Image (cartoon, helix red, strand yellow):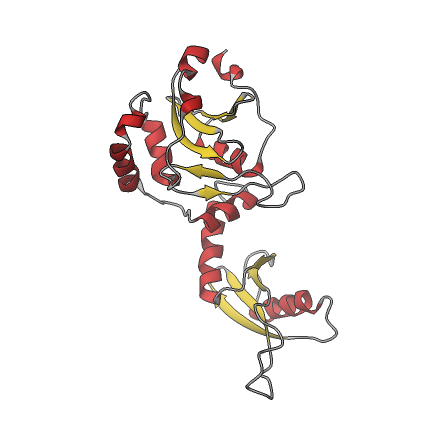
Length: 244
């Protein structure tokens, strides 16, 4: 366990790197640790803007002392997002958890009412596709999220963003039509990718597929695995592996 003084020392050491002085540190304590930030001295001339704005904030974990960097948001907001990310970390890898939390997901999220309303509004377009319970459950938790993707260099947003229904962009499912003819089982469209409009779809077992004009891939045995795949990117096995 890390004490307040130890958290202060770690924050001061982290924020002193690359500086010629030792900054003053502000601390906000919460149950999982401390949010820390450099305190900028007030200017002698109140008419001039501060020399530094939007400086980095960090969280020092109470149990491990691990430091993570966060956006320049109010300390209570950072603390709440850290708690959500920690909770998500029991289910998703840390890099994926951060993307999910930033996208608006949290454990227990439920937008089933919005998904059901969308299904009614688009009933004619959805008619060819069986709305499996697994697909409804996946959209009830993740529906409406926009998930950026890491590129090959580990840069978030450098890959292709995925959109899960309902979206304001409309409904795209042409590549899901006839899937059952090719593989012997039907799928329901969950959303689409900006990778040339590829369709993200789920079968009755909860397996998730990425239907691109160039090929069709199995990206997860369930929605959790698929979310990780969408955020991290491929390579993925061919959809044919699911039909064997």
